[in-house]
Amino acid sequence: MGFQLKTGNSNENLKRNLKGTVPLLALLTAFPPLSTDMILPAIPSLAKTWNVSLSVINLILVCFFVTYGFFLLFYGPISDRFGRRRPLLFGLAVYIVASLLCAFASSAPMLIGFRILQAAGAAASSSISMAMTKDIFSGPERERILAYIAVIMALAPMLAPVLGGWVLADFSWPWIFFIQAVMGLIGLIGVLRFPETLQKVSDTPLSRVMHTYGRLLLNPSYIVMVLVMSASLFPLYSFIAGSSDIYVNGFGMTEQKYSYFFAFNAMALMIGSFSCLRLIKSISSKYLITVGFAGIFLGGGFLLLIGQHGPWSFALPMFLITFSLGLSRPPSNNLVLEQVDRDAGSASSLLIFSYFTLGAVGMWFISLEWADKIPVLGAIALGCGALVLGAWAVLQRRGIRGAA
Image (cartoon, rainbow, N blue to C red; front, top):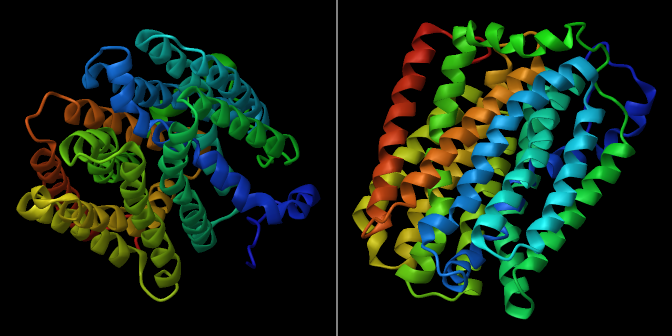
């Protein structure tokens, strides 16, 4: 892979470590799916063990996402002010400690509380890793890097529930969090060995560091793009929270078999990202985004028509939806970052904050006591697909920076 460093970034240590750049960035970006999807197979049994409803036990997902999104808003501008490494190291250390505490939780409220702490630490990874891509790479090269990262990162949601299912088959759910602590330690070691990527820190006083969001909120092209791209992910997060109930309680599958179906859906994300990586060399980004949004809409329609007929009738439309997200997400993320010339850390944080906040709403919504979650999920995908496809058409007509 012949990557080129961003113009002006000539740090020799960074050049020496370039071979490890993409795997490290992918690991840091993968913390959310690894932290959520590994525990998914255990959700139905945890509800029974602690005698609480699924809507209560799903708070270990919802609260994680809300807290994660909230802390993203702090890490981004702090990384612009003090560099990328120190906030990353702090966040990873908190994540490791919180993962160990989760392993020793003895009740649902205790686990929910420790998951909140775990999310506060994990939030350092996604926004800062995306800002690091802007530090190191530029333009079409960054778009390709984001696609490479998306391909590698897609392995996380594909393998995480399978690993969780294997752990539950031979051990118990606390071992899931022990494994996450080890994962955090690997990330910590990687960051310690990696040089600082931000060549010039912001000179904004700490008391005014959060004011960068004011500038971003006054950037209409950035805000509109953030909202459109966030809405496209709403069906996926709804699926994440509802999938264990649909497959285990609805279709009567074992936890391990459910993990394979979840991995099948996650594979769609990887195939979509890999397809983007191959197609982006010959097809314009705006066409890939259009096809991706149309796929979400079509997948929602198929879910409503055939999703209740059996596990494969449900899995195949969800595969289309997730594939479409994998196809459109790398160019859409890059397009959002193209709308800003500075404050990359804050811009990345606000982008991912929007993803996870809207995702938490989707998780809460699908966790309500619906008689059948499948038509609800189909309606969500159909509605969001229509919304983002229409908004994207309007944005293209009006012209938006970087939409080549």
